[in-house]
Image (cartoon, rainbow, N blue to C red):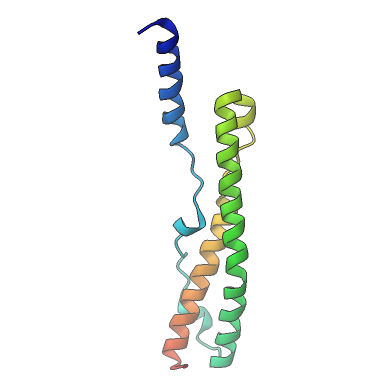
Length: 121
């Protein structure tokens, strides 16, 4: 193995190692945050349905935000490996978007549980 092949191999191994360190997640990988159904116990079936519909309407937008932040970070990561440190400073992850989506999914689960307890259709 000549000198240039060794250098390329070292760069490749480092890139693979650090590339696996990204903490961003796709929307499909976000789990619901636990929300107690007690939060929604006093609501009527109609109110529970309205809350659920409002959350269902917001989830696709939240999923889009999570996936866009994921893509942006992955692009910055790839550019970072070609240009090194300056591009890596722009990676901020997608934890805010991730948390908002997880919370919305958790609220929807809590509403479902409250609706079942209230014997809603």
